[in-house]
Length: 175
Ligand code: AR6
Image: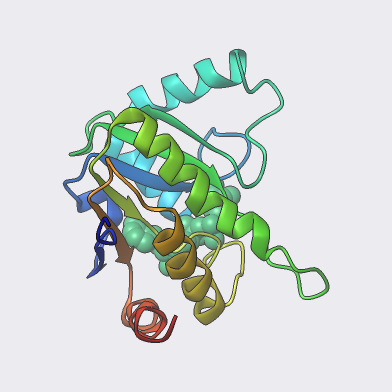
């Protein structure tokens, strides 16, 4: 029997991580935005945007659908790839949890196809897209535990502030 993939929590900025793949909480345009997305493009440089534009001109003419994931170069980040995924916008009147879980699962699938051994995730959808942090953390931890498999050897959640860190700590302890 194989042992489960370690899940690690780090408090900090995801653009400072040294890992094989950094997951970006993007939007379907793939052309940048605020939050994690803005930070990744700012620090990673124009090579990432150039790759994103190529994707828009080829496979993703209409943009990347919510819940899917696609990889580009990581430009000047200390990583080989950025894996862009589009989280759902949180809605009080509609359960979009399956789409949020899909972001984590699809990002890990893409990471595995690339041969990534270490993968950093932000707390997808919990910023501009408004997902409640505790629920977002539980979905993230549950999905990653179910989906992480070789060649991925470590999944790292990079949490920007103490509140997010605590939410993930609680989710890891109870999920
Ligand atoms: N490192 C780690 N975590 C961060 C960082 C960082 N540098 N910056 C923010 N966070 P968000 P979303 C946290 O808004 O909710 C963009 O405009 C943040 O505190 O980046 O999926 C895209 O283009 C929050 O907990 O992503 C989309 O339009 C979490 O990361 C939209 O925002 C996610 O916040 C996506 O919104």
